[in-house]
Image 1: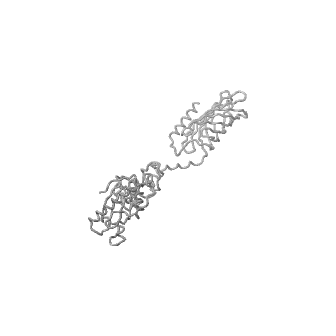
Image 2: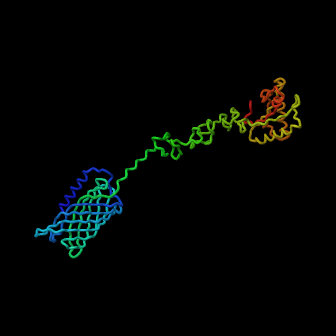
Image 3: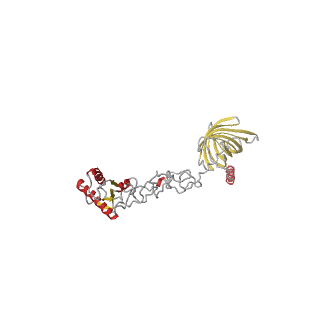
Length: 390
């Protein structure tokens, strides 16, 4: 036993001094081959010398990383006591092994099994138990030290100790090369940092092939921040990605035909003040509305009712350029007042809401040099207002 302890100690010291050359561990589902040398100590009442050298060859299979099976054939040449001759000892067994810490470099194990031995033509059944150590110093190669208590179980029980050391080879394929670590992706958008043009993208935001947040309408504001994601190409937008509306009338500049509408003035879909133009031909120097223009007044009353939420309706009178400017201003005021009074008297509209103003010839909408142009300029307009114009 002293010889066995020294042998194992020396073997383990060598193991620790050898550098590892690859990943070394127990592998499941592979065969093993284990050639070993050592010695056997026979029980003293047998007709052979106590200690003799021994050899063994084991062939195993790793069912799992922990459990394995192994068949072992071992032999020794024993000196007979007194006669000076020798005899042979052959043992064969099937063992089960349980390995501890199979993913470590140093792996202890326990073993037990059954078999038989042949000593001087004497055949007997045999049981054994013991344990050992594996030290993986290279890929699929380990130093091995093993000690077994061998017991003959026919007739008188014989107790012998087999101690061996050697190598264990795992018949496994080459270890696959390690999978290269994925390149770092700090913002987790799927685009590695070294290719990511927008490395600070918030989590969960869809990105393009450059790692930048998607901007479907190309307005410079990414979709996840864009309150108006369908802005036409080339339209200037604000920080929310919505088309700019300079006069704040709700109609963006690219659609606004009246981009300077005063703040608060209701507008139509073109961004222009919400107005209704009445074409009423008054007699010369008259503010009397002819009966034939009743339909125009009906339109005016409907316009006022449709905009009941507007604080004021300004009724503005306009003339063409014939006559003096002062005369035309007074005439436009009288005609605007006439329309206002008709809406109050005939339609029951709120007088406080209706404001009459005259602008004379100062706001033409057509050419005063033609009859048609002068007809268009002689008009009365209704315009919705939040505040009264100056």
